[in-house]
Length: 321
Image (tube, rainbow, N blue to C red; front, side):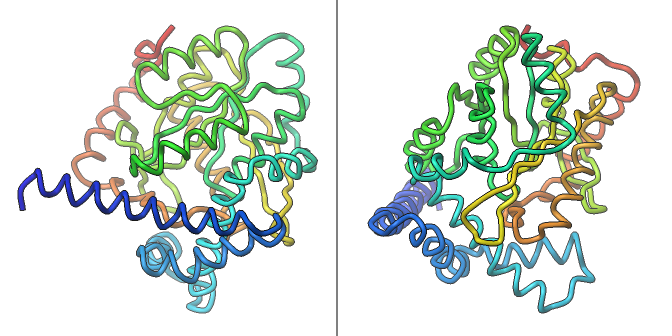
């Protein structure tokens, strides 16, 4: 098959996936909010996930990270994880109702005095989180607390879906900074002015270094920690945990990760994320290929950078000023 036919096939598949998801979202939106959210969760877990291979990927990741997990729990998570993903998607496309509900979330945790002090002093803050519970609920709740929540995001691989997905993301809070040089420059300016930023740091990062996550190497970006150091911004883990009713959230703000070596700061983030995942197994996105490049050529390049960083190289020098 030629490269041209590969491109055609990829575009056609992306178009059809976007069309199918768009139809589900449009149909679900006709229902009241309290019904449409669990409905899309059910459709995602029972129909979309098995067909798209997401259920199998959940099993694959669990076999790697938690090989001793009982089979009954594995099967439960194969349904529950896509259900949470579907709910997140529908909440994003129900921005008005979702925001009205999420802004009343309980916000608590030892990190609150730190971020309030930074805000009072006009200093930047970086909230670091992952695909845990609902990152968007945390965004909305922190905006309600008075923090202008800028977001650094990686575009979706599906170009058709990404066009309206990014628009929906932007409807919850602004500004938005797309991954890339231009986005980095805009983000740096935002932080210099004392802005607040939220970054998800639990994806397989091609420019990252292999760090432990659930006892296995996972390529992890150091950029979040490096930005924290460069702009002297507290690096604060925050989690939007879905309540048992499936519609509401509690927002837990942790104490900042102590500044220091960016590798150790990022290791600390991975450790704190793992604690949250173990406590709420069905709320983390086990569908991601988190450990995909934890070994191999890409990991070897990351390991070389890891050695440079450990030897005292200033990795923040490459960031925009």
